[in-house]
Length: 451
Image 1 (cartoon, helix red, strand yellow):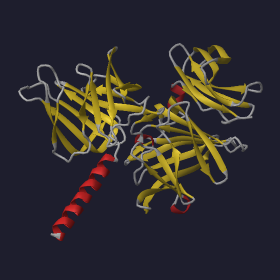
Image 2 (cartoon, rainbow, N blue to C red):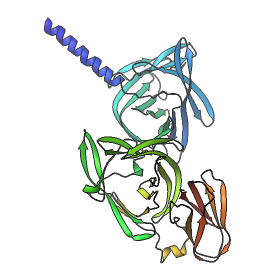
Image 3 (cartoon, rainbow, N blue to C red):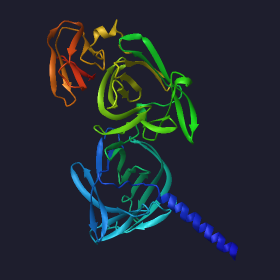
Image 4 (spheres, rainbow, N blue to C red):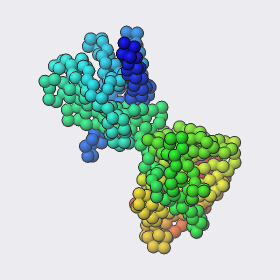
């Protein structure tokens, strides 16, 4: 009899422990302001729906979140609440009652009834499937839970919802509609897999030269991996002896292991205008990002680039600036001392990416705007550009708000390579842009003024 009681107690404990572990995973982050953006899973179909938690409302002494859905300009709202087990209850206005909508505590292949489905079909059977892996534009998600709503007697009323841990709803299917998560926004952060901004694979390498001194070159490698506190980190640097220990998380953020701590180094999810802190040695950096830049580089014109500004208000000349391009990685690095390293070639997944523009041949036949030199600069810098034919040419400086500061060139020029000296004695420190524009060509690059 004692053995039976002990068996029952142990079984009950294990069941409760498993139930707690499952309920402790947040499959639906319900903070106000969270948003999810979906696209149709068909070629060239584009944006489908936005869902946002816009506010809360108290009904029958319970607080419900307001989930607002926007489809082609049409807005609808759902009232729901999350209980202390993480389950989602939906409020139905037609009978002023709440019903269990998504039960995240149940075992794989479990079933339950969801009552208020439609007037024609008053209930449905919900089947749970655990351990799903699903890939969308937002990334590849593992350990997902799928809820399949099956309506007895119906052939086209079924619905399928897939949730990813820490992310929320990543797939919505009903009738012939199939929507997948493009990205989400939580507290100003873009929740999406950004791992393509730093391709972290053994054997990948990047070769840089110093701006103005092209013979000064160095190569950074993903050399090897090591396990630290049950996590895998990679050696990143010119050699093992001088390498950083880094890793990429599920969202593509880059973490560095130093001083016995794991520190966030590059946060590609950060929304423009937000910041985070990074501490290294005696420096305490505030890190800001600028997104969506177009960079004209030695290896081509690169879109959707992300620019990081590391600034320590208490130091002088210790600023750091990094530019990343998707599918390539770090394309440019600058310091407050005015030293800039430019990417000239890379090996990514065995593919060689090298210089597109050859100054002695191809570049003379194309429009090209060089990176200013020096950059960053104190009071003056040189802007260099090439035009392949007789053109009316305009070169202007803009501040970070897009406001025009000064026009440097506004006239017809013959084909050739030109150098314009830009003096910024009266301008405050900060990030600026310089634009080259002709009748058939326009491009811009950034420059950094530090005083």
